[in-house]
Length: 561
Image (cartoon, rainbow, N blue to C red; front, side, top):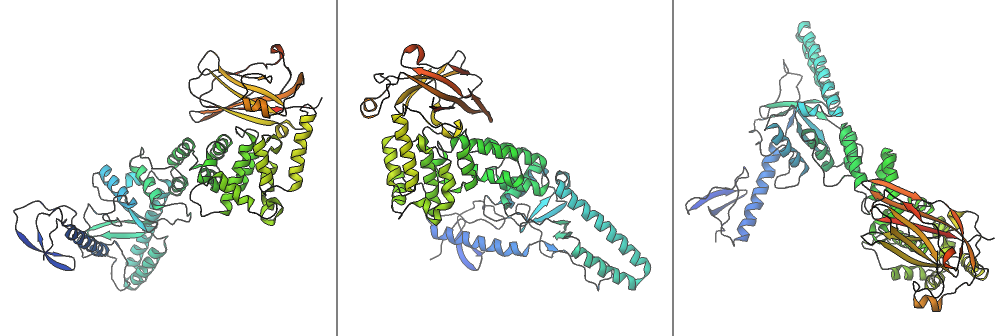
């Protein structure tokens, strides 16, 4: 039974509807009866037609391939070999991908033809196994392509002069000159002539040694020659490397600005690697600032945490600006990261109970085993003495991560601090302080958070002051009957009745607005907090010119008198 299908002609256009009659058409390797108009339900016929159409395009496309011109030494004069096949249609560029809507070569060809109004190319670039038809007014905007084109012109003029000298020297000298000219054309860096039907243009070879350069990036970079406002789907190392390859400083700077404005949990690791590769200190600093704020709040809940390099994670943990609501959140992030290093096939982030089970299943302490030695600096960078909540301490003891000596030292310091009125051995404030974080966003006029440390409790407070972008930050010591404390805290947590407590504290405020990182700090302040209202509050630290959200860190330490 003949199959009916509405199929396209060889030029990619659908046939115009005609009177309903049967026509005998030759389609690919078959010879079937087709109806001029399609039947909507004839899926088999449609599939056969598209398969035959694709086969025909592949066959003819290979026949239309641009041919390199070589000059035989037996010829008396240099001639340009041209193909006897018909020229490639304007709607199908050489090297394009038929039927593929997002082919990089096709995207570039369509844009270049639109801008140049279907003008003939002056040169053809051979790069990454594809060819790209270029026009001289736009080609000259690229430093690399301009040098290739000018070097070719100089080489060709020199060879033409040699040929003229051979002609004047006689026929024997001419043949030798032809052979030398032909050999030089093959050895002049890959630049020669290319023919397509009656069209003749310069062929430029551009080798690529950087594996990060992709066809999509080259296509986009070449499109910016014709339309500078063109934007890619994603800025990244591929576009940055393509800009370097083609010598496009404006695109290079656009890419840097675009990368700095689009740092997310999906891109921060790749962008930081690209910044190190291209020695871009500004982009590197932006990625590190992003990690200081969002390592815990964003990246720790994303599978991209696995791609964070060890050195960068360690540097972030050691930084005094790293933000976390609790010290335990940083420990949790490190445990997640190590788990992902040993389970590289995971495509989604597991639950925290799965991570705990993984470490509980290890025989012996993880950090005392050969596979765990290199991760010791990560845990040394944490403020383990700031993990004081009961269920967090129990989890630390349950996991087979820390050696017994580490746990003994941590728990002993907790015990001594509680029984000595909160005294801590503070020799370096940035290392020995305990940090508490608060995220301020929205339209509320005041944000508060109650925290406790070694039997002392404080209310951390952030409030708007006057203008919308000015805030005041302070802390207040709480008494055990204060309503800001929860019932479970009053009944299960230890309380110190010490009338006065000397506290060293620092308030750090960070934000990012308009691509600019802002930081305000009160510096380290020492103050004695009492139980009475008069001496239980700190001075207000005011900061303006900030944009929401704010990431506020209160660092506390109780020095020994």
